[in-house]
Image 1 (cartoon, helix red, strand yellow):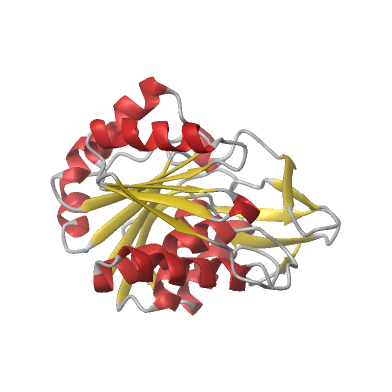
Image 2 (cartoon, helix red, strand yellow):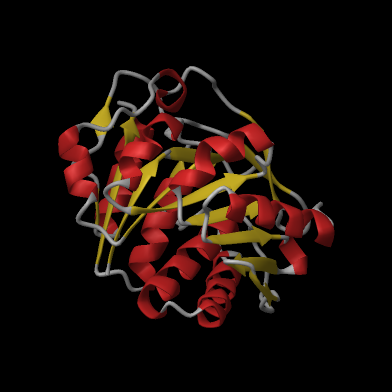
Length: 271
């Protein structure tokens, strides 16, 4: 099994700890897919040229995630500032805006697309400014897309026709709102739609057949990256088995495990 992630890389800066951790949705999903059992995992993104980017690359090397098709520009890495509440929930509180992720959009070359074609699944997200590339990417690989909390209909119309897997965060959504969102995505062409709802678990729909997944008991230290781990767990098991129930159960296990340590996948560095 082979997967590739295209999109964001950042260092999550824990203000109270004065430590940063490598992260970003695309990087987190890539690393966790490798840990979960994908034989080969790669990442394409835009790196800055500061020590934070060097640390992200070092962490990817430790996890055997290739990034040789990525770009490096003269800019600082994304450095979102993070605080944790008493329950271990991560809260983003700011960060610089003139970062590599903000000032440059990734344009995929024919060589990049040919490279992507060699993978079973490609994951990206609303944080990656990749929407103009989706139509081209779709011709070369099935796409997984994390919408986070973006649910406006115009955005759905832009993305859903080009992807197979859609993931949303919706802890504040009612059951009817979840089902309506799923139906809309299916009508626009997306085969599998999932909504994670925090402590309420997750609801998924595979071509209109709905599945409910509860959370796994765990000791919560930090929820950073838990949603990304859920996505990685689901993709790993679904690509392996094509079975929704197994994929969702494994995803919940992966998400629970990530809550037991700091950062999206570890590797702390002093700020």
